[in-house]
Image (cartoon, rainbow, N blue to C red; front, side):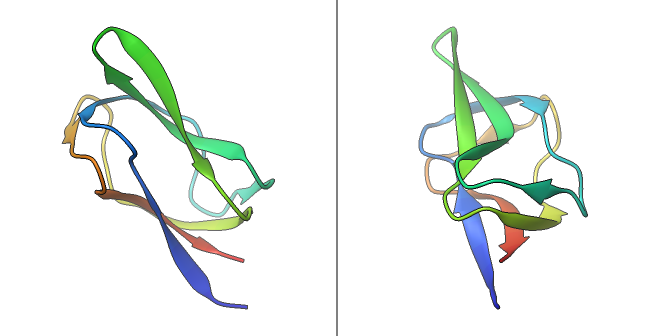
Length: 73
């Protein structure tokens, strides 16, 4: 069991943080929602697991490929 990074797929701003540190997330579960060009794009945990850290804040800008969370799973 190791850790992996969850990265944003688009540039935008963090609209909402859905998952909390310590929360178990199913594979494909939403961690944060990024607003980009008036669209809400979920950033998901590919493999699921426990949220170890959230690396962004609501309202903050986020770049494509930026780490938004660290998962243990």
